[in-house]
Amino acid sequence: MTAARFIIVAIDGGAASGKSSTSRALSERFHLLHVDTGSFYRAITAELLRRGVSASDLRAVRTSVAGLTLGTDLVGRSACMTIDGRPIDAAEIRSATVNGEVSRFAAIPEIRTALLAYQRGQAEVARKAGFHGLVMEGRDIGSVIFPQADFRFFLYADPLERAKRRALEGQTDSIVERDRLDTQRRTAPLACPPGATAIDSTHLSLDQVVEFVSKSIEAAGTPA
Ligand code: DC
Image (spheres, rainbow, N blue to C red):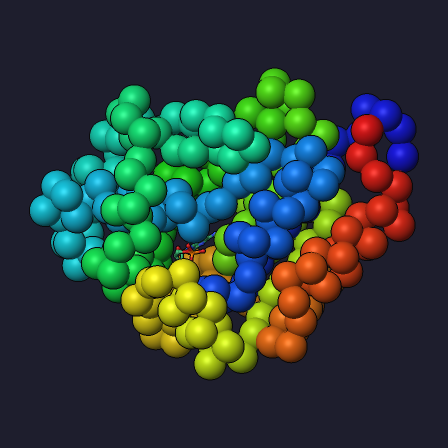
């Protein structure tokens, strides 16, 4: 690996499977831009709900989404979405209302299409900001957004364990229902893509998951 090497790490998995904690740790360890694509779907969901648009009104969804201007602010090592120049409200996008609605909005093809180029564009954001690559977490990163990513991992964990993790974060989340909707949708469903490394984190600590993933990256030569 040369000093100029720029790596893309894809971390996919279901709700509360440990993607965010793992991605943040990797971002720090390898100086990668951290991109949480779930926060993008959440931000759009919150924005549309604020405008009174429901996921069942496809025409209103299409019109509203087409009119949004998406930008990116760098906050520490993370890429944070702006909508029409405004930063998103971190508390609002983690609210019980957004938790309950986000999978319905994320299943709408026009919303996924609107986010496709935006998500791929994060590689340029990372390059310009001098990161050694990016770690992007979501549901379809290794399958649709960056199928050629240098490293692709798929995290899963027992639903009871995941519910415990959310409760510890003080959140109300419909994990099983979201996974059902995310897995069954037609466009870019949640699935471990062929060739990705699946990791069952049910009985692993965060440190153990990060260690395992880091070793795989280091085995190929650390970036820069
Ligand atoms: O990662 P998260 O739980 O914050 O994601 C919120 C929702 O966004 C999730 O239920 C499905 C959707 N999502 C998606 O469809 N595709 C992604 N790449 C990321 C999230």
